[in-house]
Length: 192
Image (cartoon, rainbow, N blue to C red; front, side):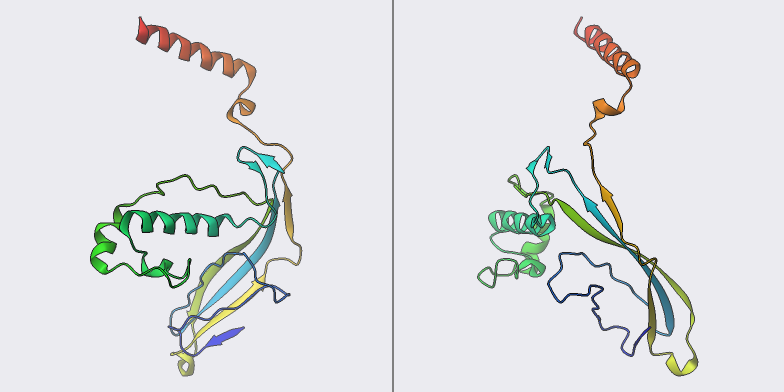
């Protein structure tokens, strides 16, 4: 059980045993002042195929960090600066975008201009979190928040991918010939 006296201050807690840096993404949990929240988490580990559509997997790949670097590189190429929340990605050598550039240039970029060549990881650990807010705390704790954290089970769920499915694998033979027949008929009709 965690009691927070300043509910507007961020507090970070780690759910792992070893002190090494984790690549897990955390979900924020919010409890309004004077209320309590319950949080239940479940740990799921997923193992992927060694070779996929994008090549071989890499055990140390961090696809989220790679995509963030690619997005920051695109912003810098197109706008000449980085948004304030990305200036620490490459260090302090890049300057922050002023508000006018942030509105005019950065907000118009929808996706990276160049292809991001990010390796896919071989495994991924996810923490699934379900939170709910409950009743008011006693009057003496009205300026505090309270969050209870529980693990759903002590068992870690693991998924092992054995085969990569494609659209063709999911269609039955009859459905595939029917689909191709309709497509061919539509093509002949439109070209004739």
